[in-house]
Structure formats: structure tokens, C-alpha cells
Length: 350
Image 1 (cartoon, helix red, strand yellow):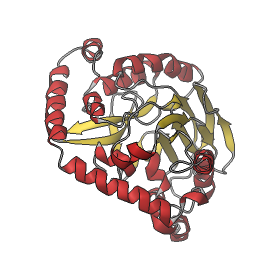
Image 2: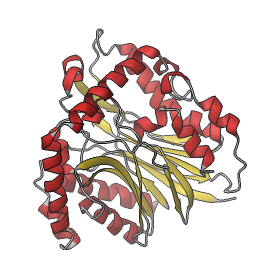
Image 3: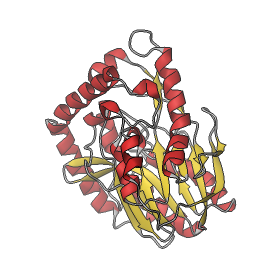
Image 4: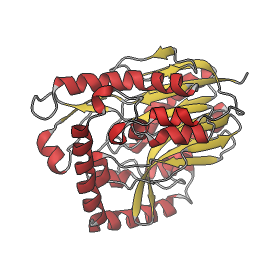
């Protein structure tokens, strides 16, 4: 029996203020370490904030940037594995990348497989990323927010014989609007973030850790989405779920905090079962493990249309290419600076 003490950190984030967000996270990280956690999970896009405008590109980093350097520092200090999602720049492209840093400084990454809906305006999906990290703790699968809600994640988990599944989220909702964002959709979103880790755990027999942002969500939205929806808040509700599907601990929607629990990992020699994959694959590309209200042709069409528009805008964006080259050059310069100077040099980034 392999036991692992894990932690989910539910935090608020300020758009574009990478240095301030990292400093805000530090005491929460050290609290989790003090409670015996060996693996700590931060929310998706915690260091950059969930900004849906071209300004988000200015907070992008390479894997040698301030966020990963901060993570390496804290992982080494606490003798822990620390995971978080950043906006990664490579060449002329941006990716939503989950980074897991070991106590010894090893950096593993998983890129978000798709850029759904309006996210497609700002970064490229990896398409076929394996979504699995092998480390001394075991084999860990990672679903970055929306990737957990689509049916190809099932094959990732089962084919890889994952022992633990991580869900870094930036799950948010818009202001209630009966025409474009009715309260029924907000309620189904709440049920989704609460029920998804439980369904995954029960279906695959793996423990699940979900870490979501909380508090106000303030950002313009691009294209048609900006005309129909105004940003509002993150849903929080981070949780740790046992391999049997029991919710061991969780947080409410507004509170910042740390939850720590010991989970039993699935056996590394587990026999795969194709039926698990098949039964997790629902209609319209959604996973059947999600909230039923989401598995509709109407919602799939709306999200697909927004994604198509976003990809076209991203591909044709001269500003995106220019900004990516500039940020990557800046990151190369920061690589030669000490950690504290590298963080401070980006403190004023918009």
C-alpha cells in the first residue's frame, strides 16, 4: 500500500502580478509543508491570473522563469513536490503548462491538450500531450481544468496506469444573465466542480486532488463572448477525494486556504480495462463523468464556435508573435540573474 500526503491550495490571484501572487502563496505553501504534505497543488494560472486579453501574454514565462524558480526554491526548502500551471512561451507560441518541481529541482511538465472557448485567443492546445508524469512519488496524471471535462482524458489515465490524478482548475462563472448565462448554468457549473473529482475517483479507482482559484474574477472577454457574458467569480470548492470516491476534505467557494490529507495510491501494476475508457466517453466530446447538463449539443456547438474563432484570431495575430519573441528574450536575460532579482525584475509587469 502506497500512501501519500497531498495538499490543495485554494488562492486568490491578481491579474498580471506574478511576483505579488507568488509572495502571497508562500505562507500557504509553508503551512501545507508544516502539515506534512509531500505533494502540493496550486490552481491553474495562479501566478499570472486568469486574464482574457492580450495583456496576459506579458505574464508568460519559460520553464526557467520566475515562477518555476520560485517553485524550485520552495520545493527544495520544504522537501516537497510542488505543482502549478503557468502560461509558457516557446518560440512564437504560448501554452498553458502544468509544471511539477521535485525537491531536487527536476522539472516535469504537462501542457493543456486544448484551448477551449475563448482561451483559444491566447494560447495553443498541445493536442496529444501524454498528460502523465513519472516521478519518485508514482505515476501522476494531470488534467488542466477543461481537459478533465472532455472524454479523451479517460484514455490518458487508464492507458498510463495513473496512480493519482491532479486537477488544477481556474473554474469561473459569469454574472447571471437569463439570455446568455442563466442561473441554471451557474448551478450546473457549481455541481460540476463539486462532483467531477468524485466521479473520476470512483470510475478509475484513483485519488484525485482539485485546486481551484477563488474570489472575484475580473477580466474582459474576447469576441462574441465579451458581448454576451461579463466576468464574475471563481467557484473555489477545491477538494481531495480518496480512490473510493469519498470526499476527504474540501473548501467553500470564497475562502482561501489549504487542505491536506493522506491518500492511498492506485497500484502501479493495475490491470487496464478498456471498458472504463469506453464508459467514460460521452456524447459531443464531453466526458460522461461530468455534470449531465454540460453534455448537450447546444453547449458543445457554442464552445466549439468560440474556440474556432479564437484559433483563427490567435493564428493571425501579429501582436501574439511579437509579444512571444519579446517575452522569450526577456526570459533569457532573467535566466542569468539570481532568483530574487529575477522575481523583482518582473514585479511591475502589467
